[in-house]
Image 1 (cartoon, rainbow, N blue to C red):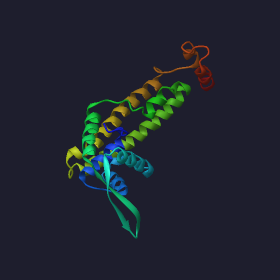
Image 2: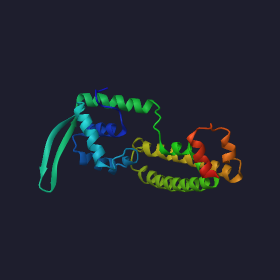
Image 3: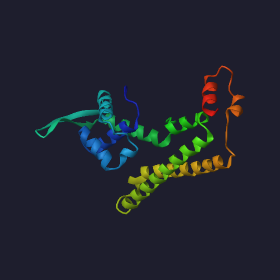
Image 4: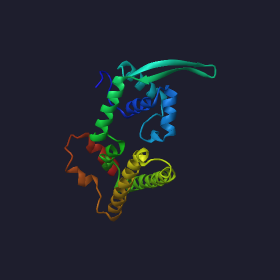
Length: 211
C-alpha cells in the first residue's frame, strides 16, 4: 500500500476512472453520477473529492497530466494514473471484494439505543423506514428494468447488491414490526432497570423517556 493513501470507496472510484483515461475532478464527479455510482460512492460534496485526489496525488498514485484553460470554465487540472496507482487500484479492489469490513452504518447504531423510546414510538419510526425502503426498492427495480436490457449485468452488480440489502432489511423490519404490534417484543423502564447498574448514566435517560 502506498504511504499516506488508505483504501476508500471514493479513492477506488478515482483510480478506477483514471484507468479509462485522464480526467479532471469535475469529469470524475460527472461520470460517477452519470453511471449511477453516486449511490455507492459519496460525491455529493466536491470538496471531499478534491481531498481524496490530493491524497492520491501526494502518495504518487496519480499525476498531473495537464492544466486546461477555457474562457467559459475555471482552470482545470487533468490527472492520470501512475503505475503505482494501477497496482494500488487492484490491491484495493481485491481487498474490498474479498474482505468484510464493519462500516459502522447509522441504523444499527440507532437500534442499539432504541430502548430510549417507547415500543409504540419505535413501531411508528420503523414503519416509516420500511415505507422508505419499499419506495427505494421500487426505484431500484425500475432502474434495473430500464438498464438490464441494454447494459451488461456486470455493470449493474452494485445496484443488485443495494437492492438485495434493502429487500433483506425490509423483510426483517416487517417481522420486527409484527413483533411490536403483537407485544411479543416490548420493554419498559422496570424491565430494563435490573440490567442497568446504579451509576450508569443510561438509567436516567431510560427512565425519563419510558416513564
